[in-house]
Image 1 (cartoon, helix red, strand yellow):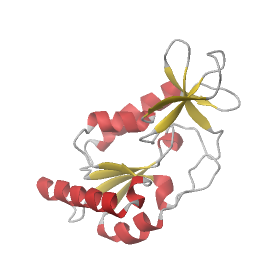
Image 2 (cartoon, one colour; image 1 turned 60 degrees about the vertical axis):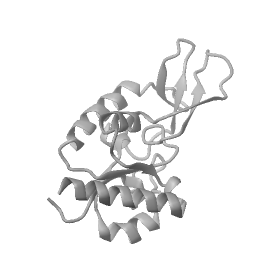
Image 3 (tube, rainbow, N blue to C red; image 1 turned 90 degrees about the horizontal axis):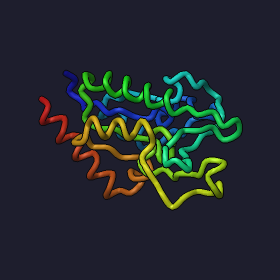
Image 4 (cartoon, rainbow, N blue to C red; image 1 turned 60 degrees about the horizontal axis):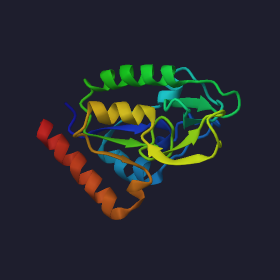
Length: 177
């Protein structure tokens, strides 16, 4: 067992170029300040599901039947099964990795903790609904590990929230020793 906490992280936050546009969303505090104190477990569910980089942007949407789907913006490919299948397999694999926390990409339809839900074409106005939900991978992760400290980079921009998250991660790690 490592003497440092293990934290799962959306790979783009560490500077990996896995975003839909081929870029990253490197977070300097995570990479440069917290990074030397922890062991990262980088994950990009979209790339791991075989969606490639770059790829078409996608959103969560709800159709007239009430079903939540992950759908691409232009071509309107339904990627729900690919993402839910990968999420279940990846979360199962993470179960044996000894995680002490997880940092997710805010707003991502796979990793976000507070993602807007859109309407599907043919289900009325295509605007964003008032509903917000977890991304598909984030939902699988938090369901499997309800006691794991989880935050997104937007939450960690607040020094008080950041301090609470780090304290919970280190407490989780000490409890596992």
